[in-house]
Length: 60
Image: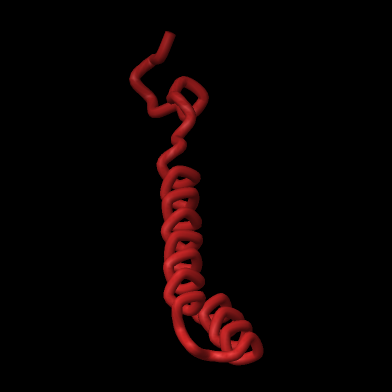
């Protein structure tokens, strides 16, 4: 029983931060997938497409 002092042992685990990281990772993957689709329909050669994808990965 708590005596009124704030005891972290009694609190439920906080999953907010890990959920936020998962959301960011999902949005990063969606952005890369969208860029891949756009590049697939473009008339660029494979070297240029791969260079653009790697540059986008570095920026994200």
